[in-house]
Amino acid sequence: MKITIMGGTGYIGQGILSALVQDRNNYELTSLSRSGAQNHTNLVDSVTYLAVDLTKPGHWQTVIDNSDVVVDCVGIFLPSKRKNTSYQKNSIDPAKTVIDELMAKTTQTRFVFIAANNAPWPLKNYMKAKEEVIDYGVEKLDNRFVAVYPGMVYDKQRMLNFIPGVLLHFAIYGLHLNFLKKYRPVKRQKFNQEMLKIINQQSSVLTNKIS
Image (cartoon, rainbow, N blue to C red; front, side, top):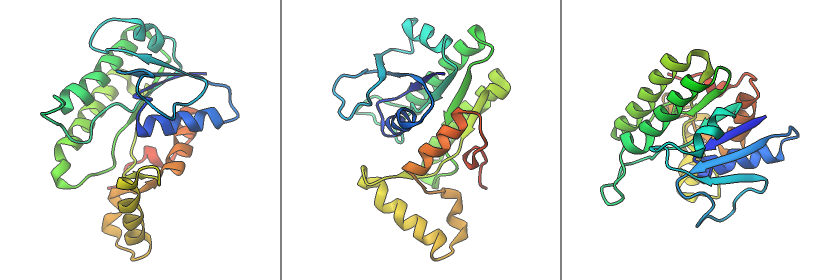
């Protein structure tokens, strides 16, 4: 199975690639990102890292067209004027570009989009960006588009997420503050296991949104 990870050099993408490499199935893995393999540590063996610009035609189109599954981990949590980033430029446009490519050139390739189950009010524009991609993907690809709804994906590798994730998990399952369930904390290892299921077309709790 040929699997392409958009944003495979990031925290989420690297975790998914690591899980795929360790799985018993035989995958051909490619990562598409702005920087490719440059200036990154802990890259996953057996993965082809390509530096691409999705705003321009290029080799990335051939990679996408020949993939069985494309997983979109691209995007930003918060926009930054200093870095010249925005939800439109860095989250919405890359997804729509690849969705358009898949609609025009393929009939079987599935597009798996890492959405979000919920987020606090200050991140309302983050959620709107995710929802815009979901609406677009469903319209263009129908059942070839799959949205995944994690909340906070936490792991000791990233303490900024780990401590809030542990506290949120305790608040929900220890203190039974059920109104917090919509923020859906997920251990990174568990998230990766669920992604393996989704990629292999098995049922997963993360394809169901919690209200």
